[in-house]
Image (cartoon, rainbow, N blue to C red; front, side):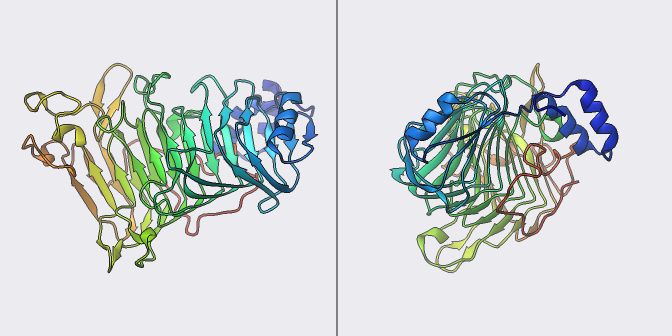
Length: 420
């Protein structure tokens, strides 16, 4: 079989030899977009030498980056290539400034086999920014790497979907930010397009998949699902870390939808600052599922007992985004339990089921209530959220993601609870 795009006939011939399953059919559907190319070796791991190798490469090529200790600042990855490090602890890159990864229509960008670190700048400072078209480009895949940050941010994803972050390890401190997904302009019209939850993402390229990673730290904002984004957060192992989101009142348009399932949330307790954890999951907008996760009890003797999941609608409490107390009414735009079908907004409740360990839900305005509103009128059981029942018609997207299946990994879920 020649290296390059597979014809439809070749795809069918391969399919006849493989065991039939939904996952394999999905893999076959992805094969036409896979491009094979040449291997290049960068002269060193330095930013200049890697940039030189990228300039010489073509879509589908692999750039092998040798062992060493180097710094990257202002690197632009704007071709459908694989950047292959020599392995964790071998190719060690210190990030400074911002390094831009731009999604490409010609193929996948894959970064694997590195140890990255970043220190300082605060959580608004990023080491990588991922941007490009939402629907008309192939995914960016970050897999099999190690990331260590201190008083810093790491990834900013400025696109609604089409990014896969899998089988990595992340380590940070209390207020560090590992992954911020935020496309505030909604230029790809994510909020004007029907949802792609579960297998509605028929190609696996329209959501952001964060799966099978290990997170330590980033206690209250390690992962942040924000404007326009469609985030699938699954089978991750977290210690002193959390999944967060923003609604329209705290951001221009708020998160589109999210799926949080099969994760393990560890909380060892203690009196260090990193133990000041106030939630495992905080949802402030859109709709989604929370299922089959395991939660330790967030109940440190020093910090007190906290709910494992929080639900908030800030927009109703302080007149935003509806203007004044007289104008505030249900539903607040893009609030919890709201979806869009391509023609109009509709109530699509959040479904919560199969969670184990200690799972306490906290809900309320959280910032005060100057309009004197009643929260239960805006977030009502059976209408805006449903507990104990799987979401009707929902099927989780195949795991592992077909575009990372079979590739190198350094982490695996400690207690895989496959969502049916």
